[in-house]
Length: 316
Figure 1: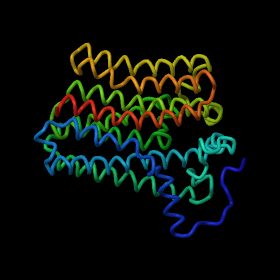
Figure 2: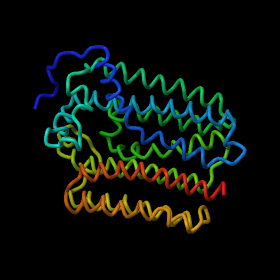
Figure 3: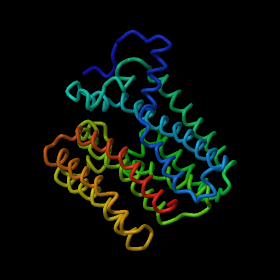
């Protein structure tokens, strides 16, 4: 398969659409954490303009961080040929080739690089503004935000962290979109927020884990060292099962230490039923892209469950 299409360059509107696809701006799942944090705030902070400003600045900055990550990942994917191998016509609607504008020829590699670094600068600027506006900005929060920015930008580019055994560590960082803004607003870390940080990180991981099964041969040829390429197929299935089990384990520990009441587990039961279906599709039937899509939907369904739990626990 040719790595890049020879289609004619798009017009301005088409190029803007291509940049939206390059930055995965329609993939809003990571930014839903804004609502989780807001409903978890103590009552006096809920309606303060400063709270809304911090949440808006953090989220808009995170849009830049994610856009930089995926754009620079696509640059590396086009250069080493892994995207051309992993995005085949057979994947159809389960993996839309049009979402890869470098493969389709809608953008050049140079344009994608400039977009990626511009998005990283956007994220850095808005996160700096977030720290300036936030009522609480302990040094560790600034360090954590800097590490998220740098490590995500180097995910598949520069240091290529995802090629050197650090992929899964980066994939759980979306959970920090719960922890960091909450801490910036309240100056504290609660057991509830720790649990929800872990859950959102796991939800991100349980999407990518199935993508990695689909991509394993292309990633091996490209030299990416992650759990999928380092393990045997049976070994990696056990790893993914372990990821699934971490979700109820985290809730169970949170209940045991008194971070959340026992009824919190009941809220998660519909989500866990969906996880069983996801594992059946991806691990039992081998429909890994179907399991990936189900993981995306479960992430989106999980956010309202957390909102309900936070509202019942803190505001009723």
